[in-house]
Image (cartoon, rainbow, N blue to C red; front, side, top):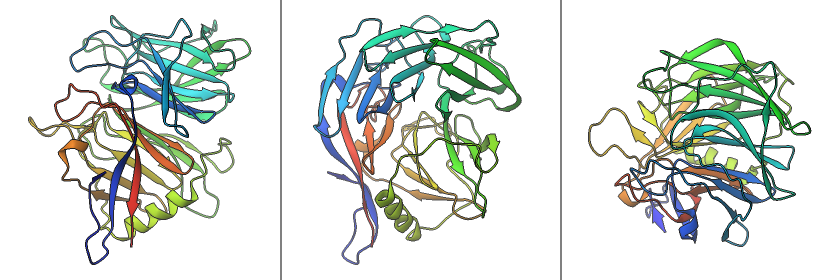
Length: 351
């Protein structure tokens, strides 16, 4: 077990990523990893640093049994730097990404009941982005996603980030983008967290973290009480442990500066960020820090829990929630080239 902040004899708090499985099929970075029906679906990604061609395979990991298998269904999209979301408890929708030659904004879906990939069709009113990579797709409801991030290539990208609502119709196998009127800072490799706002009648706001030089979160959408119907994962034990962990730390109004290609998972009122690549150093850019953003009170506070174990450095990895536990899957290590084949669970040692 790689312990990042070991509890000392006085009983201080700490955290660790505990390996629970290892398989060469899982070794990849800049992939998507989505929990659906108790399985983790890993789609595409880069198998080694410097690779131009993304993988076109889909791997299914069973967290209960600790086993990984390659999905035999044909038509798996060749993608990296994409995002994915579950729809209808049945479909895994892969949105955008790099296919080895260009950035896409298309939607390809895996029907997990039939075990087949489907290319969905844009409706006549579709107004798609110029092309998406290193963007985020946040589920607002069963048929609606919020897409945020810089669009286009290096020569064509805008100075700001666009926000799109992506509506999905599984019955018709169609999708439709609508550009929202607001914009954000130009971000790439950021993360997004849909969090409740504090107060007696909490609404929701979608916050973007990282992906640019700023350390400040940015709002990419606000919804009043009752507008967001999606039910988040139930994680009472993990929430309690995170609350106890932050109570042992010192909160700050300032978050990580210039972080990208990190992971982010929402656990109740907390956004849990790990690893990534910093834009503020020329060397030793890959990180292994744990950050927790606590929204229980206003103003929200950041808690930073550093790590001395260089073997835990990760970039282009993913975290997934299942069964009241947070899983770490894939990513490149300290050299930025070697993909980790491990699956780990976050252990918290709290006094």
